[in-house]
Amino acid sequence: MKVSEAVGRALTAAGVHQVFGVVGSGNFHVTNAMVAAGSRFVAARHEGGAATMADAYARVSGTVPALSVHQGPGLTNALTGIAEAAKSRTPLLVVAAEATRATSNFHVDQEALAKAVGAVAERVTSPHSAVEEARGAVRRALHERRTVLLNLPLDVQARDVPDTAAIAVVPPPPRAAVEPSASEVPALVTALARSRRPVFVAGRGARSPGGRDALRALADHHGALLATSAVAHGLFHGDPWSLGISGGFATPLAAELIQDADLIVGWGCGLNMWTTRHGSLIGPDTTVVQVDDDASALGAHREIHLGVTGDVAATARRALAAGAERRERYRTDDVARALRTRGRWRDVPYDDESTRDRIDPRTLSAALDDILPAERVVGVDSGNFMGYPSAYLSVPDHHGFCFTQAFQSIGLGLATTIGAALAQPDRLPVAALGDGGALMGVAELDTVRRLGLPMVVIVYDDEAYGAEVHHFGPDGFPLDTVTFPPTDIAAVARGHGFESVTVRDRADLKGVEDWVAGPRSAPLLVDAKVTREHGAWWLEEAFRGH
Image 1 (cartoon, rainbow, N blue to C red):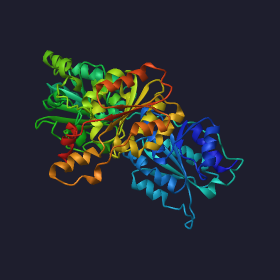
Image 2 (image 1 turned 90 degrees about the horizontal axis):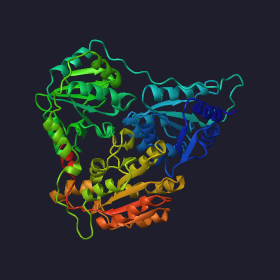
Image 3 (image 1 turned 90 degrees about the vertical axis):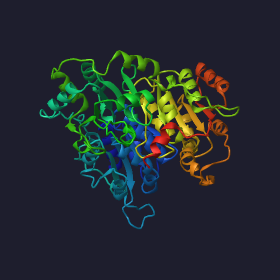
Image 4 (image 1 turned 180 degrees about the horizontal axis):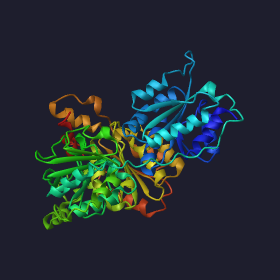
């Protein structure tokens, strides 16, 4: 058996059952070995798309998938997606062939590339150690929550594995929860007991098993309101005391209630500039507490009064068990009434700016929220438009929203939704894209059709890179470099086997209604020609910190 086959078998045996990639000569044998051992392989049309699919799949499924790429350009093509995963601490294994001969056209310093974007690098070094090194890479990705590049040198891949080498591999055990310090939990309980208006802001770290239930129980006991960062959107869906997303996407009511809090506890949440609106959501006298199982995350983005190192669910359960007196605190009748009447963006009045040939993105998003089935998984690209689907398209839980925005690259949204859809096959996948991101990632329309995904792709088409238009336009700068002539994106989609509809007003959404009611035998693209006179509300806020 060659090393390439042994490594492929070992990775599958270690629990890597989903692989995305583009196969070339260098990763051909290892990828086929994984498939033969039982892993599912999804071929993307570009390595960048494959990387983002793998990232999204990991986030939604809670498992470690693999990205398989060719040596050299296969890896460099994937780097933006790898950077997004690494910045988000996504447990992901990148399996890359490696040309170690300096005279090879494919030779680059792949270890340095991984380090440059925040990933960590491992290497298969010999036939004798190949299996254990492969298993170690999976273990590191899982236990350290890291994106790990496993380099497979071509010369090592081609060598024979000794007959004595063990091929059977046991999957690494789950990552152990970090128990909070016995000295830190009482300080947290004291802060909760003293608070009159506590708010919990849950982030990525609260998406762990048991996190939602533990936080709701503790919040119920101490009368806290519940909010999330964007990446944890949906975590408290259906809870009457949920404020939704904190930060730039927050409703006016949510912003008001968070600003009035006398205690904010970030649970697995960095409380960065996006989640706090550059700190403006934190009052001058507000006590700030942060709970995270990574000690280096505590206070990384802003000064805190108390940091607790521990798993979110474990810490919340410990705090609840401390037995402090139960109180209603922030959960007053007035707050309850306000949340019922203006707790969602859909409840906030606005002047519909739709014209004869362009639809207001708020009108579009609210209508689509009504039309599309509630059991959905939403992926969102980056751009001026992104607040509209994030704020107006409801999701059933935190597995229904995938937000690959740590690197703020446009063009990842379609691939994000493909990965999330494969992790949640019983839900309708909905990709929300701008026209720039849609055309940047257009190659993966073929992947959607080839996989038979009943996806809805919504393109908020303003014929521009809207963020730049609304950032620089008011100061009179020329915008020729960031505006484009009209593109019939609906026709592009039809060329890839999609059904499509162009939307200029509310009546045009009848085509979406018909698709939802029909067999959904082909995916649907909605080319929505949206109004473009103003920047989004969240963008104006975000640019204040730039």
